[in-house]
Amino acid sequence: MEIMKKILLVPVVLAAFVLVGCDKEKAAIDKNNATAQDAINNRKDTVDAAAKDATKQADIDAQIEKARIEANKVKTQAQLDADKKKADAQAELDKAKADAEKK
Image (cartoon, rainbow, N blue to C red; front, side, top):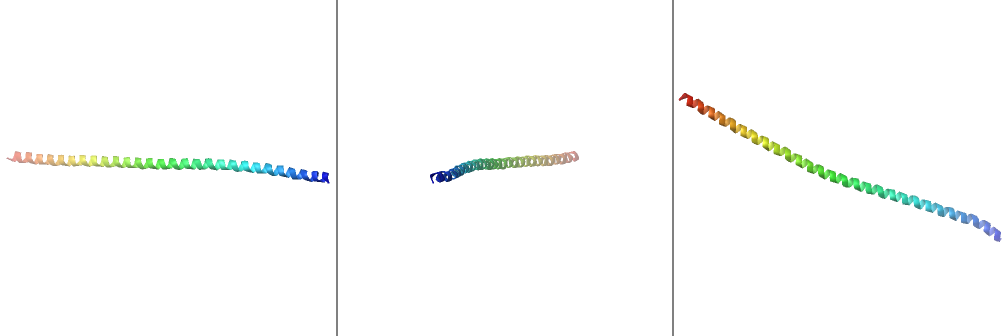
């Protein structure tokens, strides 16, 4: 009987070692998966932050460009107003010369 118990005990002990070995392997796989998931989540956070910063910078750049366009429009309109006044003044001068020549 003692020998039978030992013979039956050997497969039980071997099965226990196999199960423990499998559990360790599964735990290592789970740990590797968790590490990979953390790395992916960190990368996603980095990408989100970079996109947010890029969007803010694009908004700032757009505002600057709009201000440049508006400033150029104001400058051009001022030049055109000055040209208009100059043309009116030249016309008045020409009229005055024409009147002076008639007298």
